[in-house]
Length: 582
Image 1: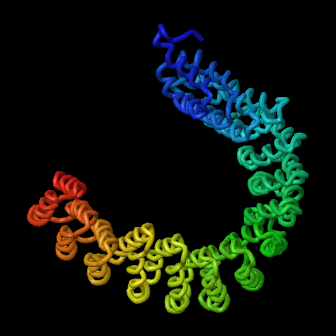
Image 2: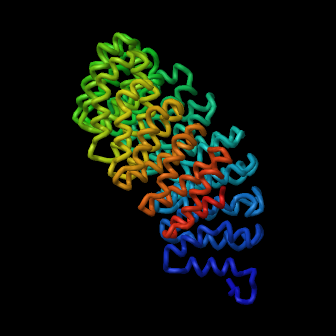
Image 3: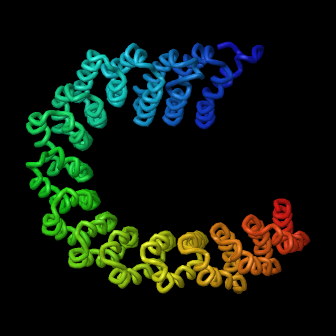
């Protein structure tokens, strides 16, 4: 392409060429990210005739650059290229990217092809996009065939011509029996979406593909086809479902590959439905086996589905079959299993009722609440509302407080911060009296934590509690304790006091701010630490939005004017900024 020295209109293209020839990957990447800007400068016609052809020749680069190119090509679809009728000019470049050896590039190219298809009419889909998918699906390169699998559900749903739909089903069937495992894996990954797209009459034609993938020698294909059982059963006549799908749905639960069993545990509820009502006892037994699987990953996933599965069985089966194994899982050797169980086991309480919850579930709850792993204890606490509604606060609080205190003092600051975030939830569940008696002092202790993020979370916690319990409660319990920090010997405590006040003003009534909070903030304007004084200015600025205008003029403005004469330039800056705003 000619140099742009004498023609300003050529400069965008020439600059792009120069940058894409750079040896620096970041330069090339930044250039690709500016394609939309370049297209606007060129206009639709030159974008189609110059920019896109040039990009089509530039599909040999580093993975990161090609991923960005695939994404940016989709951004050209629409007005930048002159409308939907001209979108097919993008097909060649995206097809080349869909043939890439790099998985990330192929995935992004397929995603972009799906994105641009949204702009196309059914006529354009039938005339050109179907041909594109067909070309990819019948390519000699297995990478193209693998990419095509991700486009079948999209294109199938957009065409109404039955002959085209039939051809698409035949092509997809070939992908499901392709000699390359990667292609079969891609077909399995997209089978459920295609099953949702086909109508009931056509569903029978893809049953053989399902069976082939479900019995594939590669577990990577089998595990991806598990989720297709539900959508396919919904489309098939009962006789076909009973003959072809139900046996496979049952077999997934004891597949030789733990990864397939993992997926079976993930989709256990839909597999129960797919297996049919006559197989309910067998599927319950299968689920119990998944809960005691030799692989911890499978047990973890199965444990996370206990509450969902419990909704499919009777109370008697829940008590006699599922709860005994649930009790074993509470002491499982894997902390991930125990954490997954802790996140869901409490939701069984409403199903069991008060008496059975106390007799069976409470023991599991107490065991998990004393677990050595913080995540397990946190997961239990996060679901307390379900148990509280069933057994009441008295039984619950007796065991709850020691666990909270232990978590609040954990050596890992992230654990301390996590338990702080649950305090408003617990307080809402357990009531203001419980908080005043058990958690109030603990919440104040967090304000003095050595880690700033914990102190910040503690302030947020108290702010939420004020919003929950009201200003009157805050004036009698929380606010006085926080304000007492203004004279603490450690300046960090005094700083925390100011940060808390700024946060409290959002949820505190004006009268309380004027009577209790404002005098303390003004008093702190004489603090010997400059960091405190300029935060006083910032806090006064926040307070002004919540109090009467006359109070601002009579009390706040003089304090800020005094800070304006401060020797520290930061104090003067924030004081001046606050004065300007008021």
